[in-house]
Length: 88
Image (cartoon, rainbow, N blue to C red; front, side, top):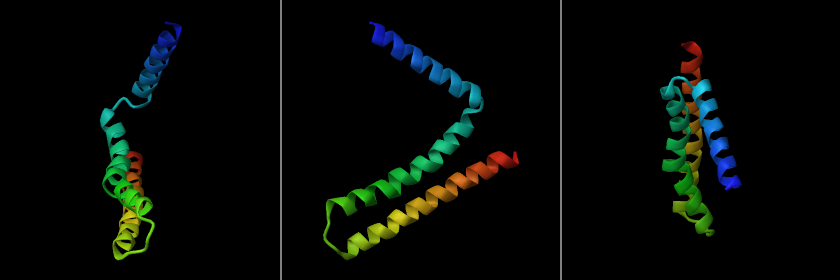
């Protein structure tokens, strides 16, 4: 019972702080989306393939390219959102 109460209070305070620091929910969704989209679509699938099949192949080389492309895309998306935030 006490653990449940503490968890509830922590979740409530976390949500309250997020609402105070991010009054515009679109900003929060844009920042999270710029990181999550490229991670889910490019980085994780290629990383799982690389770790699952240790032998060298052309497919694995393509996965390395896609992995780097995902990281670069994530960095560019996040920097574009930060730039948009700072310019407005």
